[in-house]
Length: 260
Image (tube, rainbow, N blue to C red):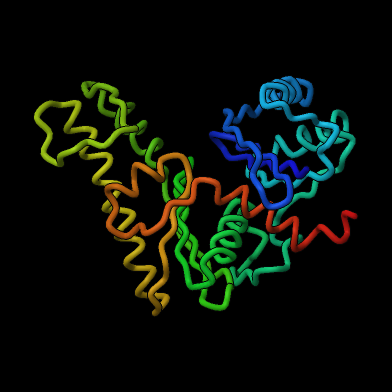
């Protein structure tokens, strides 16, 4: 079995693959101060609850955008799984040309997203990942990573509003507002945040399409991708497991031969 781990600033996604099949995946909070022993307690409980025996994990692939956790996860893998993890970055992945000025600046999650989306759709793409930050990644028709855009995520934007406007109440934004014209303060805030963010997404996608000069397919992933796909005109497909699927593909195409 293959263990894939995608460490984001807010959440960490853990997946178990048996060949090409995603057997199970979990989403946990990213804790920057966690130790390898504490991470093992969480992982062991998740594995046990899903009848997965860690002794059958033969390989591990990790993408991580939180530098302090690199050492922790490396130690966890060696100490508790007796495996050296394979770390994804622009240097280690040779199956997609990275056309950034400095390829090493591209996050491992953005590389994994782009590879997984191109592997499935085989066309030019814009991949929108709704995470702590929202990232927009452009992929050419021949599978090259062109670059992209980064903006504050929807939760960061909402939190800034709640912190700076002391009279406005905190509202739950993980549901469809229904209407743009709110009839009370809470519904007005929800409509403004969600539809306002939809306008941001559609605007950036429109400008990226113009610069690309093609008609790319727009694919969304990340925590609120289902919600945003309902209010964004530009999103065509939602792929909840895109990042970890990209990690699997990277392992299969880049590492498998050397791992045997």
